[in-house]
Length: 252
Image (spheres, rainbow, N blue to C red):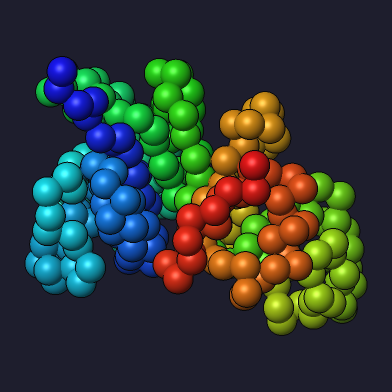
């Protein structure tokens, strides 16, 4: 009898270098574990990856890049030219259908997908995966401390973060305003990156709605770096340590 096919994970990444590179690093780790990986991002981002020969792009069996159109194929999103809210809406609409097509195509090709991983700013990826009854996880590409800050901001600490010069959050050292993401503060709430706050809120609200076993967050860190913060985060989510220097470990 033929052996079963290896696990196949689709990773969907936001089309920015700071998102693509951690996704590629995570893909490499999965490939070394014998897992097949399909990485998906926008056509424009994929073109830039090819042009730059994106350092770290695996060129091995079991790795595929499948781009999709977000409607901005020619120039990509331009911060000072395009409307971010409109872009995110287009990315969600086009990306959701593209992901359905990718997952269906993989199944038709005899490479059924085992799970779907998304990185931050793409909460709709989780919606599509759950719609198709596939396990999904959030690849948190920032430190665990930042995840903790976001969590507490949306779970009762917003006023403290906005009003106090120094704020104390569970599992974290005292934080001054300079330690916080700028768009948490009134001076940054209307800035070019204010969209991120609403997207993070949506992502965390969706996690809160799930059963604990489905609240999977892959955290880009390792024990020795953020031990106390990880303990605090693990109380709230099913975290899996997936830092580039760490062995992948789950807290469940």
